[in-house]
Image (tube, rainbow, N blue to C red; front, side):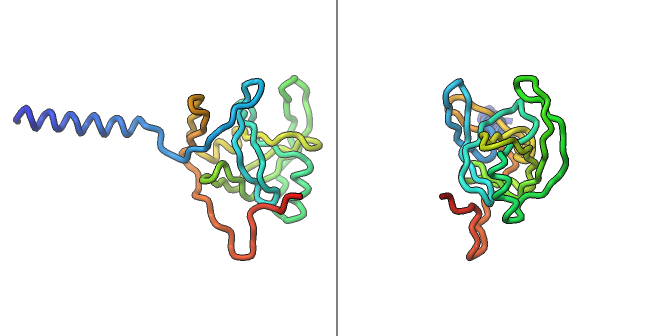
Length: 169
């Protein structure tokens, strides 16, 4: 075999290996806020645009009671179970878990049937492991701040006359 053919084969092998090592998937930009927390912009079908705190230490996505009330009015959330959650401060709290029809992360990632724990009042929304698992393997990058998700569904356009998000007042 000629040296030229071997070199060409090595270059092709190296190029193929490099592309295999590159993360593939949907890139969702994050915003770094105070206290070194990271947020992604998204939507909850029936609620509208929300900022999700990205929390890989949270077993579940969370929504608040206000959002749940909006979803229940539209039939977009179904009760799954109650559980005893342990909050960041160590306190135990009984919370309800609901299955949400659709959430979007960024502009190009749609997740269906995501379980979310419901917290009181108007607490922030959290993107936890129940949502991240639906998105498949993920990479959390700091420079630039972004999530790369491997198994998102492409964002579907709603049928004519139907909107994904509720009208925000």
